Length: 418
Image (cartoon, rainbow, N blue to C red; front, side):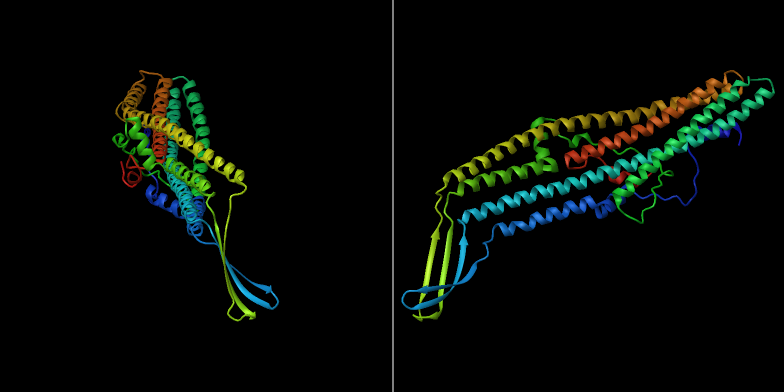
């Protein structure tokens, strides 16, 4: 490999890999995580458990059966059945409160899925960026080795000082240390993804042959005004929807605590099973009296206080989430603009400077140190691009998690080459 070929190799930052490299799409990995992630499964079953309790809250308690004896000169034995019945509206309020509680757990389940999607997307692009940076580091190592050989030849011909070769070997050592660190970081990312997917058949994600483009962000989907954004979050964000469900539960429980003053009933039917008279039957009804009214009064006060507290919590969570969404929205816009600057300005400029330094070094018009500086600058710019891409996707996926709906083509973007 001659110097021109090698420098072109570094400038493109590309290494040809074997045809066995395989990359799963982001959408496939997200679906796999939805299917296998234990955190999602646990939250789903908790939500289903709370949903199952709705019917029980609207259902009567089991009746009691027994035997009683009546001795009034002649002994009579009765079979008895007793049913306790709460005031009817209490069943309705209990069921509505439980339904709201189940809704809050359903929102937690939705949030768990969105958070898992965010983690998978962030790791996907983090692994992609890491593998691309590793490629560039390996390419730079090969380039510096070739630079060292050229410097040694120039030194032998008396055209360059011996220090050029020493500088090349020092640069090579630095790159070797970087490569060790990068490989360790990439391996850690693979382990995190494997744990998130919880799939024993999943071995390793290889994205090194792909050229993934940055997901397209549509800022017009996000409301600008505070009232509209608050309404959008209450309708879509699982965080706010969960808190609103909890508020509804607190409201139903507050109403229920006031209806506890209403009487409950106990119905009893007794049928003779032995003794005289043969046709003896007894019907009875009992009604509760709120004699210890201070107990119910304190319970009603506590339920009302919990309702008020939850109202403040919903307001607080909404305001905080609005601020967070605006912050993430700004970061995503900045990231998108930064990536555009990298692609249209920084990378072409760094590549141009690198080619100029290469040509000047070959013509003995610049020093070896200038060539290394241009190589380092190109390396920093390219690694900066991939680091920015990783951060951009992290902020974008987090924004979609907080909003509760997509504002990009993140899932679809993974399947297409740039």
